Length: 115
Image (cartoon, rainbow, N blue to C red):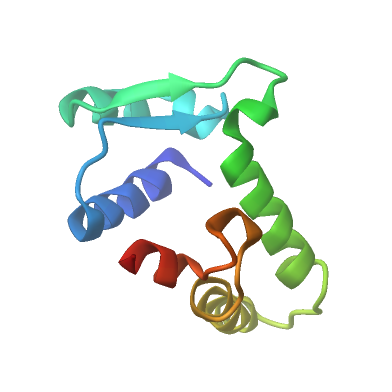
């Protein structure tokens, strides 16, 4: 994903959820780019990068990516980008509102956030 797309996504998330103090990422080119680094500086957001070869330092997103990949991307054949978007919407609804998570005391993320 290019830096511009990451920035646009983050701006939407900040508008919805507020600005974080920092963002932890790997060392991908979208995060090391001057465009992204300038955006972090302009928004006074700290960049917390993981050490190279240490994905466990970003374990939460690595686990989420694995779950999404297995449940959606590896489990289905897609014939259009819209197919991916539609199935992702259904999966997100299930993941956030229906499926209990052991790490959240067997609550859904939406139940845990409300508590």
